Image 1 (cartoon, rainbow, N blue to C red):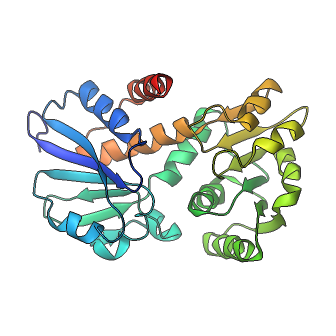
Image 2: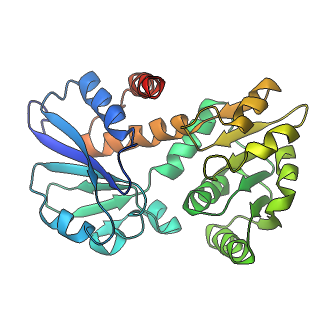
Amino acid sequence: MSHSPEHKKAAVLGSPIAHSLSPVLHRAAYDELGLTGWEYGRHEVDEAALPAFLEKLGPQWAGLSLTMPLKRAVIPLLDEISPTAASVEAVNTVVFTSDGRRRGDNTDIPGMLAALRERGVQQVERAAVLGAGATASSALAALARICTGEVTAYVRSAARADEMRGWGERLGVPVRTAPWDDAAAALEAPLVVATTPAGSTDPLAAAVPDRPGTLFDVLYEPWPTALAAAWADRGGAVVGGLDLLVHQAVLQVEQMTGRAPAPLAAMRRAGESALAAR
């Protein structure tokens, strides 16, 4: 199948969506790959509007990136989903096949693993997760592949603790939960994954140990977070939200365009420039 100058469309959907860097990353990839007929947009779509949005898409559509609150809502609207997406009940990538089927995947999980590998993290004996939302379950799915021991999840409620233990059982990773008040203890783990909203981990910056391991902070704006800055000051390795965003977008571009490898370096440069301009 030839791709250019064929006209193809893709987009990111979610609500709110104005802040999304996905268009910047995907368009940079199209430029680098010479896909001159391709365009990538963004659309404000919530759960209620999603079925009608999908129904009106024509054959020129190659795929969609999905952000909150659509990653779970889209599943009943798809023809098939990958085992990776099924494992966390979350789809962030929809590809429209040549025979008109809608295939869902989750590139957040392999994107996390690729971002860690890039920083030399192939395996850890234990890990800590800060938070218990949708990103935390993706983090557990990634950790199930590289953590040989226990994962401790620091959470704010008993309900969240039950949820994280449930995900651990489902994903085959032993999860112990601890109260958020004890989150400073998380920072002693060789790998710490922070999945909480902006500002949540700021008070922990003062508790970074003298010889920290690796911090994976999934935020990219504002960057660096107070925790990431303190971590880097102490000589620890830091993986940021832009690393995750770029690596998961690389996998989306490859699936949607059929072209591999996607241009990681060009996509990262475009993301860095866009963030610096904000």
